[in-house]
Length: 155
Image (tube, rainbow, N blue to C red; front, side):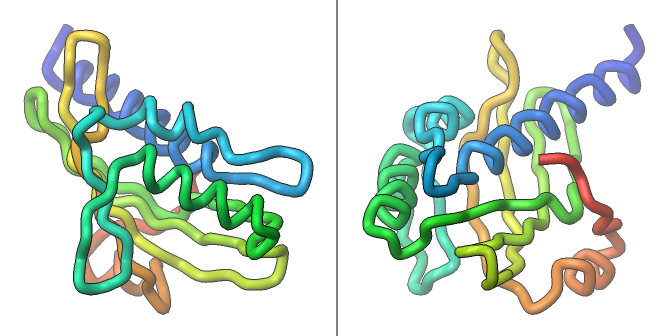
C-alpha cells in the first residue's frame, strides 16, 4: 500500500469518527444524545475545551452529561449538528482536523462553530486526544481566510 493510499484511508476513518461524534450529540424529544458513542470517540484522558473563556478542560463524559442535562431540563429540546467544512492533515500516527459545524437549537436558533481536533492512531484505529472549539459568525469566512474549503460533509 502506498503512503498516499494509507493517508486517504486514514482521512476517511477520521472523517467518519468526527461525523459520528457530531451525530452522537443530535437529539430530539424522543431520542436522547448518545453519550456512550460520544465518549467512545475520545481517549479516556482527553480534554475538551468549549468556547467559553477562560478555557477550562472537561472530559468527554462530563461534556456529554452536561449536554444531556440541557435536553432533560427542556432548555434545548431539539439539537442538531450539521457538518460545514472539514480539513484533515495526517502525518504518521498523528492528525489534526478542523471541522466546521452548524448547530440548530430548538429548531429555530442556528449558530456556527469550528472545532480543532488532535487525533492519534492506536492499534485499533484513530481516536480523539483533545478538542477545542469556538463560536464563529461564519464558518465559510473563517475557512476561506485560512485557505480551506467549507463545503458540507455528512454527519
